[in-house]
Length: 484
Picture 1 (cartoon, rainbow, N blue to C red):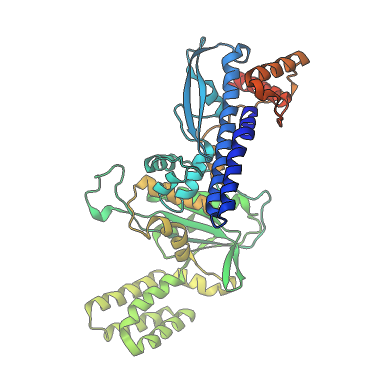
Picture 2: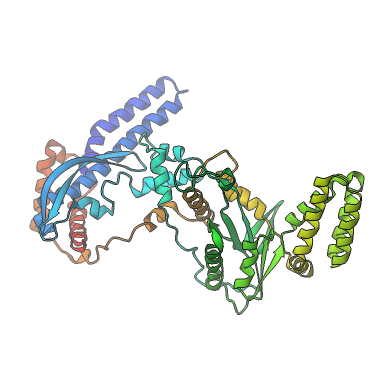
């Protein structure tokens, strides 16, 4: 790092001065000034990172006491793409005389897989872009400079993701009522497992599920906000996987809320079997039919009545609110009598059966109006899933659609992309006890003399570091090596 700072003092500052002089001759070129400053600062940052990595590798290369049982094979030039740009540096390839393992010890200490070219911050930057736009843009935005990766690399990173459980509050909340809204998106698949494996185009639809838990709704001006909301979901195909999803949801509720205080859980949705199955897994859960879908069916059954349509709808709603199932059926029967078109007759019959089949769920909502039961699942599906998965003509695989749905949910829950990247691997052994390794004054002076010899004339230039931080680095390095 010292050398990079000194080089910046001699070369980088000159480049900055030239940038500002050029700007002074034409003050309308502020964009060029900003670009010039950005390039100088980025280049400086990349050189500092490269020097820091080479400092550790050189210690490993020269100091056998830091790497017992490890022997040098060769030194290679390599590069890593970071969120700042591409870092080019030298690292040493070793083998262990006891185990026969061959590796770059520096990569091991950095927690990087063999041949990995992306650092954690670059992967986090890729995911941050790809979750909202495309794989291609994710690759282009791997760093703030010109370094980028292919869309295939972005896809591979997405497909390999594993997600942590939804975080619970430190202290359990006490509420009497909870609400759960549920719905699914309809995503077009390009292939199931590999390209060309979809023979029947009717089987190319994938339906990732979205479930969210909240404590109520509060007004923010003209808008409404869900209180304490947490999101769950993903592919979850089949009854077994759906059951696993519901267990995740209710497991979160058990961890986040005092169930002695909790009295009611309303599950709101369109009546799909997977949604209704949720109420079977919790004693306090009751399914309530989403009024949006009920209205949609009623509109479909009455839209052809022209001037009489509103009267028919009002009569149906009065009967529902009055808890009169027989009266609702009679209204649909009268509509059927005046409907001649076969497709419209089918719509009336479908609507009647839908209302009749979900009568208990409708009545649960009617009888509990005081609990202010609403469902915003359609809007959430559009905002969380459809904006990325289905609103544009995109082709997904099952894995890609599932992982992107989960990534969108992770983002919506306030998850940090860097923490998600780090979640993918086990933590490295900590350098515990490094503060107790003490180097004597002779070792400190030896390091200083080595620095002066390495830097030559630049050694006398003012710097902003002293040998002690390097001593601590050596101590930490030794402890990391012992942990391998």
